[in-house]
Image 1: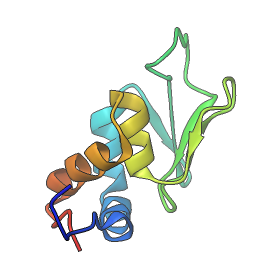
Image 2: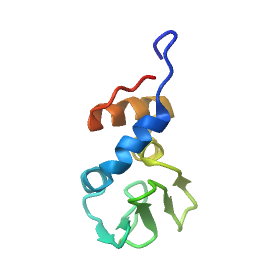
Image 3: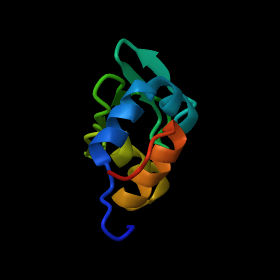
Length: 103
């Protein structure tokens, strides 16, 4: 982290929510929209079909109900999918959605 500047997690998560459809289709291209949720295979395990791995497109919350893995926003999803720390994921998502990563 840059000295004296904090990562703007809330602002980044909010910007990511507004681009949730584009983000999940990029990260989880085998999925499909079901109402307000994106339902996909969990790429971190041998998931044979979509169903238990879901991302709420309004809130950014996600979970795999087969494994118990879950998170509260798309930053946490990036960290989970790409084996990143939360701060790395936040900076990556900020760059993807075109916002400043720092407060």
